[in-house]
Amino acid sequence: GAVVSQHPSRVICKSGTSVKIECRSLDFQATTMFWYRQFPKQSLMLMATSNEGSKATYEQGVEKDKFLINHASLTLSTLTVTSAHPEDSSFYICSAREAGRWETQYFGPGTRLLVL
Amino acid sequence: DAKTTQPTSMDCAEGRAANLPCNHSTISGNEYVYWYRQIHSQGPQYIIHGLKNNETNEMASLIITEDRKSSTLILPHATLRDTAVYYCIVVNSGNTPLVFGKGTRLSVIA
Image 1: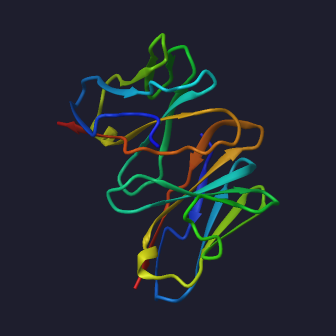
Image 2: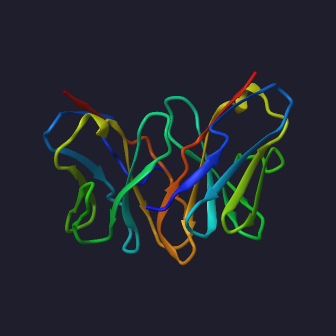
């Protein structure tokens, strides 16, 4: 199957700093990428839908000014957690759909963020 | 709102078939049934999907009832590495994102 990578795999930062997470589709072009967040012992929660070359669509309750999403190319989307606080500590997972092939959504390995 | 209902947890003996049920009684005609699984601290992994007919691939089989209100994912010979949370998701075509419910935590026991 298609491969989606995320970088970094884990990050620890101080409260108030910003953290950027990259999501790359390695062997296919992704017109649409999705960002999810998962707290311990909970399911994945959709944060936003990212379309290449346009603004992201955020789910209700997700602050677009806090979670900045950029999808500048067909293989890269970035999520920046601005002014991170301890409550932002979570497992962030991206996924991507191949251009012209909507059937399957491929997920990255996730990024574990710990804000001290 | 959850579109699917799954048991919270299940156990299965290693080497035996694991049958994971899913109810989706409000599924509409253009919605597909997808199954993903998530092994601890990893991203979800695609398993299989179907619309009306039963499907089989190298990982599993998907049995969809004739009225499409429920389905069963079958892992024919479960191994310890199949221990994971299994998610049954209904979604229509296009750019609709996958919305995850709570899933079924499958424990394969030696």
